[in-house]
Length: 189
Image (tube, rainbow, N blue to C red):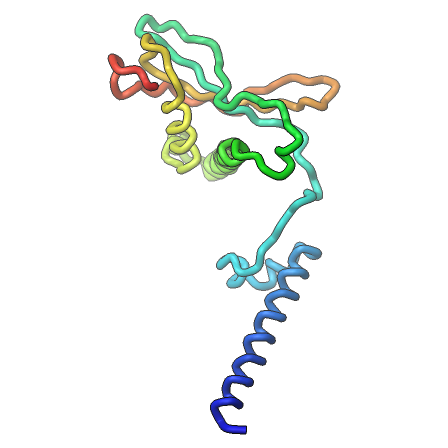
């Protein structure tokens, strides 16, 4: 056996051992919550995945992103949902291209709720929430929704709803300030 073949075999075994260890750590991270905490460098780099297909505490509420417009006379229009609920079709279990957009909006609303709690916890100014990425991204989404020609400003609202609760009462989770459109004379299409 020559030395180059021995080196290749050693590297193959080392890589196989590395990937086997990585696989076992990844499996352990799915079964125990403390595995990622014990290896912060690997967890922080995203090398140890944590999938939660079945959450230990499933979501009990729905969150809806809505907006309303204000015209030049100061009249405020009704709340309009950004995404309208669509009826589920049998093939949505496998292929649902609209899921990406709704997932992005849901993730942004969840991230903004976390940012809001952090800002309140650290006693930062209330307006500092407007400088966060989730706020700016949600604002971008609502400002690019179709608008009437008479609208001069738009506000977004996050509504929390418990659809399966016997005492169902939707709650307002967040209300933004009104943001002016860049050009009043040119409606979005």
